[in-house]
Length: 360
Image (cartoon, rainbow, N blue to C red; front, side, top):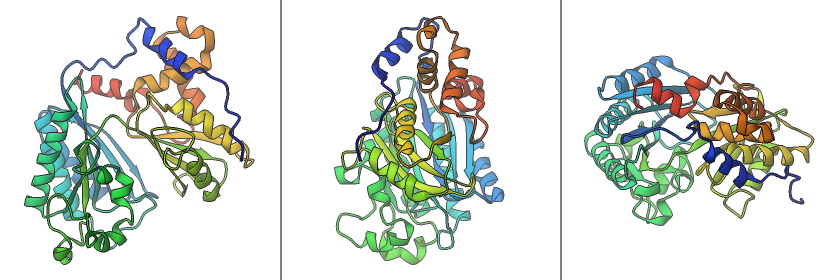
């Protein structure tokens, strides 16, 4: 297939215009904060999810910012932030609660996973050094392994080996293949028990912990139920195997929550590959299959700059004279962020949620 007919845009110019705005579109985080975005392998049972939530909010010095359950994926993403030590304690309590309540031996869902707490990233904000976040992730991993008896793999900036840095590599084979994977050379956990204690760890599986940069979880819904089309588009755009877009992970699936196929993506660096660039590229590729995007789903929170960049593309030359609120509204409309499920800026844009929580 020839390259997609993507709209000709100077994405770097759009970003430059945003950075040159004088009304403060840059994130205004000024104090060191730690953000945690754990993903739990439960998206249906609110009895369990509410207990995980209660474990998080029980820790002073940090705030629960967002909770995003998906029944079909059978997965829930929590977001909380605050004083680094408080965030690490809240993460430990949440992992402990999930390990007690979620049984991976019977868990099923669309999303790849290897444990009751599938992944627990720590993200530095407000000038907090990444090295500090990595050190805190190691402390958390050691404690989870020792006190909870859950196997822990370190990833991203906390990884001890390059081949264990990327989450898809650690999670390859999923929970069903975890026991066999633990028996392979080079795949012993960094902390906690290994395969010799399988009968004891089978219920929780393993968890992946590490420090990383801000990531945007971004799903594009298509006007088809054909997961094969979504998977083909994902293969063409993801970074691995020389895909069209750098710093991007992508898979395609059918999402029963919305009765459509989705291209599900992690934008590893939104400054390099932004939601706008992903939307334009997926729109062009989808046209070759006779389908089109119907809207986007942001899982968790998204930086303001991502939405404003799309607004700048939509507004064109009038962007420079546009108020921030209008640029955000234009970006939401362009990316159809409110078509799949509600998108309320004060509840979905990272800087706004942090400000409302008293963390800015």
